[in-house]
Image (cartoon, rainbow, N blue to C red; front, side, top):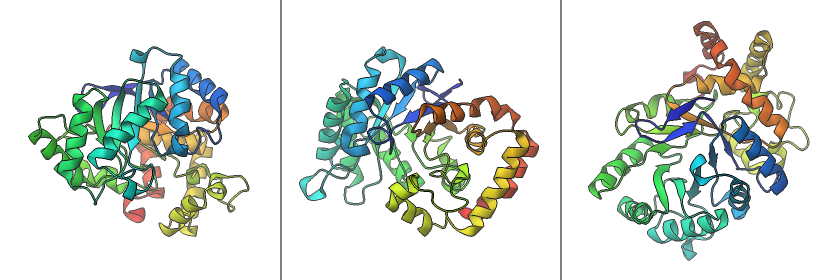
Length: 324
């Protein structure tokens, strides 16, 4: 397991990490979560990600219960604040009130004194940036979180937050958590390019398999019991963004052929491709079984197989200009 700096900052994360979206409290109960986190620790994974919105707080509770088995200094845990309840009740967004109260509630569910990273889960057009920074300043100054970051923010918003954080005398956002995979590339590879030097952000990326599309499971339609059947809003989002169209499926078939040629699974190849990007600090895995975890873990072993020739073949299948 490789450990990578978060951008220019001192915090180190394992190159693979465990996320809890759509799995903790749904596919995995406490027994399974404990088994997964123990297995992850055995393989050197020390970064674990959750959010207040994941399964109504159940994901945070389960993660906290499982991590009680380990020394707090031996892992990094993050949560994200934005969605909890109605905005009119101040339970949504990035107001100073919800940032502080939301994280307080998250810490209770996690049964922790602090998280290592708190993310602003989405940009909030209803809240002025100076108020967001005010809430983050309180969180950092009080020790509720050691660092902060953003998720799915634009480069312009991150630059504005960086400037205002420095004016307020606090650490700027050190990390962004974007979707990043072979089908969704432009934000990470183009839009964020100026941010890697200044302010020097790192990336903890999610959805490495594009909600399962890059595993090939949807080549013949939507299987019964699959994630896209269980979560129709996710399927609708993918369809609206053209990620389930026939042109994408043609490319996925070519990708499957390349994986077969290399003797690896499509999942392993897709994750290994992300790991080759030195700007990525950690790839967040959302697994629903130990078996799936074991398969995805092997991406570490094959990343060195990805020569320039193979990377060019992958680029030919999924050119950045096409999907973005």
